Length: 157
Ligand SMILES: [Zn+2]
Image 1 (cartoon, rainbow, N blue to C red):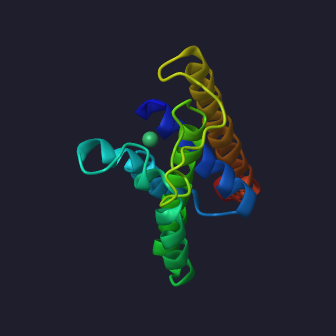
Image 2: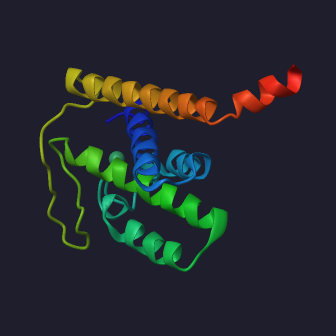
């Protein structure tokens, strides 16, 4: 998947988690945005095999331990980081090359063969964009519904 697709999937996943567990959207989605492309840092280090250790469950597990030990804003940002990492790893699982998700086990796992920059990826990205729009629209709409409009109208009369 390219960076646009990874970012869209990450934000959509973060918004979905926020809706499901009533999490603070800004903190969680900011974490998602910061980790959406983090696993592909291996492309910049020749010592690391692409889709190896950085695409494994090691970092999400370590961050989960950190999240347990924190409270407040940092807790929700770490949750966002975990969601962003997992969304990237799961998205790359749908590429034919697969990922070493259970590193140090060096076996590549793959669930499908969606081509990089292919039509399948375009569809996934469009679905993610649609969900982001839907989620933001629903949140903004419900926020507007919670405004005490009758009190405001009475104040101005
Ligand atoms: Zn990747």
